[in-house]
Image 1 (spheres, helix red, strand yellow):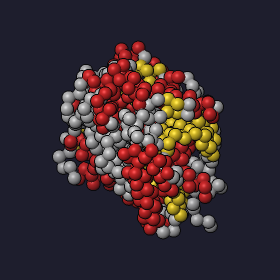
Image 2 (tube, rainbow, N blue to C red; image 1 turned 180 degrees about the vertical axis):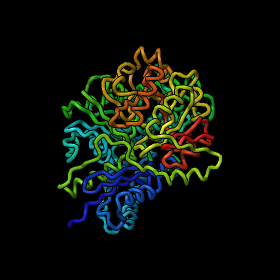
Image 3 (cartoon, one colour; image 1 turned 90 degrees about the horizontal axis):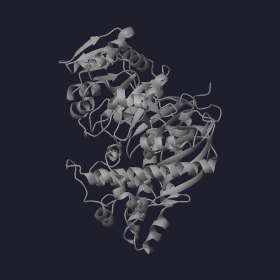
Image 4 (cartoon, rainbow, N blue to C red; image 1 turned 90 degrees about the vertical axis):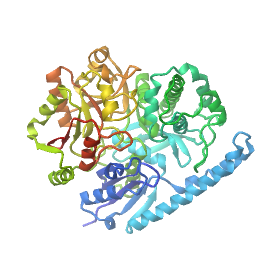
Length: 574
């Protein structure tokens, strides 16, 4: 009997480490390392993730036949001639040599990482996968579509920052890239630079800036961002006089003195947020939406496709995604549950599988989001034993949804930890904090004593797919909470707590097939209150990753203002 084709996909050594496993093309699972080790955005090798995946499949490291890694070292070296040529440009001259040296250093480091991976899996062929191809495959295979345009926008993948491809047959995918935009034209780089300028962590808190943007007036800095990010026939450019070219070593500022003079001095963490900070965020967000819409037009023109898949870190900008949907350019827009770099582990595995195994189609990927570990009774008991002051009452499985709906309707804020860990940055019901949107001052309470985050941050709603149109004008399903939709008058009247200042909400539509328990919970809540909507935010507090283990969930209960935790079938209170 022929041994199975075992392909491991890895995102590692940069940020958001993760792993995915395919056996004869079937997805066994995917999980981000941060969910298992409680270190947000960890760049360490995803040891716990790999151990869980192989253990779940009953395999050992020696049985892995191929490993896909999400960067290709040679592509970094291709940047050297162009980087050195920048020495002839007065605006970019001072960074030319350092830029070339940085790309060369990362190329060498990536080669070393590939050798290290090979030592961990001695029987496996290690394949370096182009970063944007991993993004493209992660997005398209999850859609399950027969064909679509694929637009990937991020900060940097080797040299590329933006790509457009045409893809066919999600189970045996064929992709043809039709356009690429290379660094230093990078929308992700600019958004991260302004995030840092405004006092938040680049690569982590861009969503905070997106939320802040709703409070500002973009007119003050509109012309500045039109200069900083001019549109071109093939996409866009970045003005190096405002955002100096990237250097892949620390210590190089991402904004120029001219940018700082035209806007404000960099804000430090915990300094007051002034109106000009809000206006700067608003102008950045407005220009980001314009660039993304321009790129979507380009994708439509180049591929002729009626559908669009989005990937890359910028695809987590749900307001920009909503703008593309509202434009009517495409019949449907899809964003996978993990559009950022973590998801490239799955894309890298898919790329390697389609290269080495044409006999088995890709299965188990379409529409899948609950892909990480789940935990049994023994795991729960061990975690509870560490917290003797917590009381864990066993509930009857058949009455859980009604029980929880009654508590939420009465005003409780409850953490939910059930089933397999979600993929990606959004809580989708299995690792969530839930609350009634009908409670007075619920947003203030959640931000202040539960999540410990900025008071202007909004909270997303989950709603039954059957009644979503009553509350939100999106025109398509949003199962992964990746799209901002305009709130209807019904939503603004009945559940204003989930409507942000800009009149939108980043909703999750829930079907009985996707998550039977959460769907039943929403229906039970609707029977009690008349409203099939709940506030849903991730089970964590600011600065920590979403809780992937029972111990992490119990820590969240003890360290936050949660009233209770539904830990599988245990009702845990202090």
